[in-house]
Amino acid sequence: MNIKDSNADRDLEALRAAIAGQVFVLGQAGYDQARQAWNLAVDERPSVVVVAESAADVVKAVRYARAHGMRIAPQGTGHGAAPLEPLDGAMLLRTTRMRQVDIDPATRTARAEAGAVWQDVIVPAAEHGLAALAGSSPGVGVTGYTLGGGLGWLARRYGLAANSVTAAELVTPGGDLVRAAAGHEPDLLWAVRGGGVGVVTALEMRLYPVRELYAGDLFFPIQRAAEVLHAWREWTATVPDDVTSVGHILRLPPLPEVPEPLRGRAFAMVEAAYLGDAGTGAELIQPLRRLGPELDTFAMIPASALGQLNMDPSQPQPAGVWRGRRRVPGRLPRRGDRRPGRRGRAGRQDTAGQRRGPPPGRRAGPPRPRRRSPAQHRRELPAVRRRRHPHARPGRPGTRARASGQGRPRTLARQLRLLQLRRDPGRGRRGAPARLRPPPAGDQSGLRPRPGDHLRPPRLADPAPT
Image (tube, rainbow, N blue to C red; front, side):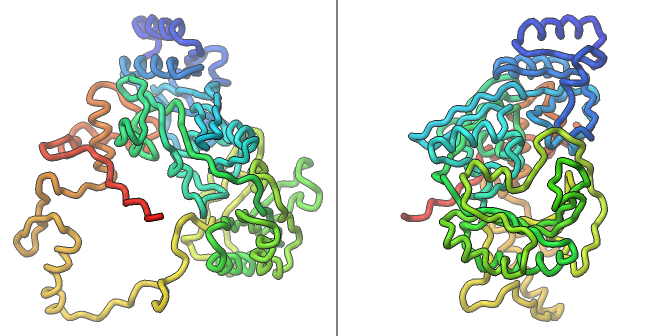
């Protein structure tokens, strides 16, 4: 789209007059400030920047983008702006000013608009003895973190932040404002928690009764990284799910803002939070304390102070992309690697809800495969096919049986794509975040709904008996 086109100019002026927020185009005063993400290393140059004040502004912006065939990149703070594809010809829809938060202590829920950051939720929730599943930094946006798979300090007990979302208010690609909940638009609620089917304007989520917990950091010299991180990894298999921990390497710059004992140094660190009292927490941490940390900050802290554990910067700064592998003597396996962001951080988190040992009486790890002859393979192949494709029709040997009608199993990606096609059958689409970019037009025939395709979320497991 060419913004200088006369018709587009008239429509843009109409959009400016219709919304309470602001609209900026390339070259206009205020454009650079409006487009700047929290990550200062990212240079976004969209054709239009809309700074929305309300959900009504978002509706009008989406309808404008749809009418002109523009892609839309919703953005709150811009912490995750680096992975976005180029925004040339796109609309950057900023929700930064939509920060209203409502806490309901009776139902233990919170409603946060799309521009709210975790600090906006943590502080009022703490006044009622409640905690949200926030991340390591209180300045990160609630919506982007939650729908992007956020994993926080209470994850081992309560799971991913997306698991606690009970409702979402969003603008569909058609420009309609809808509310998705378990009793209304449940398929949309299922899809929005990571799939991407619209522009979210608010989330409702569960809160948890946590007033205090035992948490802190252990600092070790970088030369002991292999010893410390291997010991931490073994320790995670012995602690209960009330403990969430992170092991990583931290390199601090030689800046005046950094305390003198830490300035310009590198550390192997273990951070942990325990949902319990100080006595039990100290007992659980004791195996790591025996390693002799240089600095130990563990203590009982309010839940609202968890955002200080990771010592993330509070102001926007450049966050580079790490593309190499840092050499650490006796390093952890590659699957434990994580690209460090600002301040050269690399590490691994003890993830939520995973089983940490084999069932009683069985050894850890998968069973070793038996050696089979070609004849045994041929005899066992039909049974293997039946197990892997229980809904398939019998086919000729060596050919893949086709699935039948309603019973056809479907991958999550296919279910999301079908839902997107139903929600956005015409012109305009949400494309810039590109978690699920539509394929080229010539390749879409195999994805369009056919008779027998039912747009339903996967059946949830029955709740455990109480």
